[in-house]
Image (cartoon, rainbow, N blue to C red; front, top):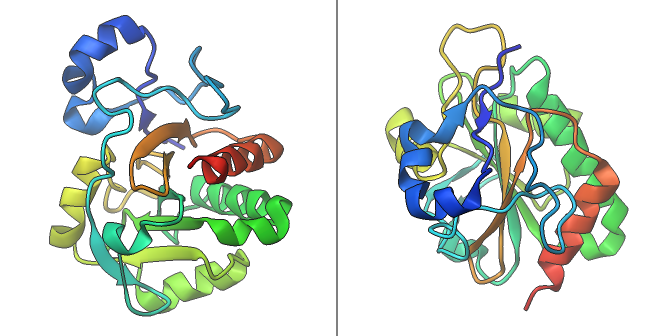
Length: 215
């Protein structure tokens, strides 16, 4: 398993000045271990992000929802949401992320309807609509979990904007960037979670709750 997680945002004084440099090459690196900024502010699993990105508008996308229709950042405004990056043939990390999100939403009970989850493919050739629908059913993801698919040309700008490296074609291991962005109901980036290692589901549910309680 060679998961590429987002480079930990340590040394925030430096990052505030060098955020663009730190996030160059799509912000990927080999680190998957939680860093010292995990649990900042009201969050328990989410990390502080550089000042240049904090509360900035979430990069735009307008992609096909495997469940039907289109999903865009504009359509998502009004409810907070989490964004993660997946592929259905992933042997380990993506099923783990899916199960953690499922469990966190279940922990929220009826309040889970107050947010959305957006999964965006990192394997456009492998993530067909039928395979994605099977994956969603297998992991019992609720209706507010939207799995977005598209062509490489449609997806590459989205990957770049969210500092994500896609799955390497032909690699049997998970080699894409594993993370979860948290976005406010106003459509602004709030925090991120390194998803390359197991996440405490109770803490993830707490962070979703915090996100929903923001005005």
